[in-house]
Length: 348
Image (cartoon, rainbow, N blue to C red; front, top):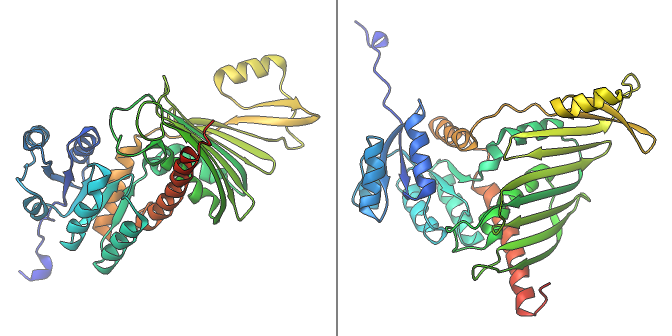
């Protein structure tokens, strides 16, 4: 029999998780469910915690980072931000593909160095901006033409974690990265304010960003809310989109075409109740309100599946180190302004 007729089983793509906290546990769970990868190892400085998570998914819990590195082909890092750079650099230098949870790293210099190491070694460096994998964003992008004003609101209860950074780097950075992706224009002006309430860093913040294209974005983030809210509204010529990341739903308001007549009163009532398309009269114009179809999926599962697919194929991910670096630079400028305002007593 010739060699051309021999078929060897493909080796499993081994992935691992560094950090066995709440986010790391979710990573381990999802990797154990993915068909194209094998959860091989879990590492945490708290050895007993790592062993507990690893045992749940039939993985190993190496005693140190070096042993962990030898056990995997790719890894995700879900540890405190201050540790991201050293762990990611070690893994990349050892030829491993890496996904780093946000915030990426502490400084743009660290971010650029990791990007350079990944590029030199031909490796995937992805950063965990999970909302880029929310089906809602796909629905928004398919309808986006030329955004003029964007308003994003992200509220959550006090987390009890990620308190090594303020709400800008913990929460707002999701919307910063998304808006940079949607606008695709350099920012030219930032006006930010934030207030510490329950921690030593800002727990609630607002920023207004003006872009070279003329687009303006207003972002509000809080981690001291009694309820969760994650919404984005985008205004462009002749249309307005309102999307809910949390519920994975949304609607579009646009000017009606000539053949779209105003809905009856009953039609309007039934349409709103059933989330169907309705046409109404407003300010002398006919306005169509139509639901945005969203295929509901778990964003984290989409993100980690994309990481595995990109790592196996050697392709660039949706949120590479480069995109994450741009978001980090803007987030740090916002944080700098907030801290400066606090030092100067310019706090509302």
